[in-house]
Image 1 (cartoon, rainbow, N blue to C red):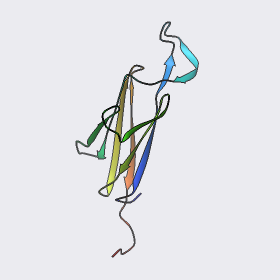
Image 2 (image 1 turned 90 degrees about the horizontal axis):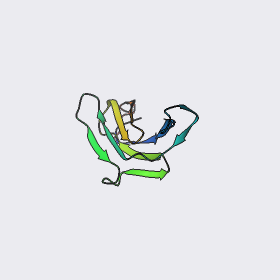
Image 3 (image 1 turned 180 degrees about the horizontal axis):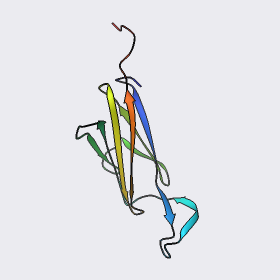
Length: 105
């Protein structure tokens, strides 16, 4: 991945337990969260915060399935922190953005 290249972060929100009994589900269910936020940017920065329902960049594809396109602006390590409520949870993804090895004009 190089600066200026778009990275598409895919998000799956799943329920792992029965909300009534608390028992583990044999097959996780895709569910829409009550809230969904994504904060992304180069590691060590405050990053950029996007909220589903407010920011059009955070897109719902289907029940429990979302994506956001992130354009890297600098080389280095990048991260995205995803948080959701309803079936509460969070996850963090990391990737490297490398400068081009080519001598670009």
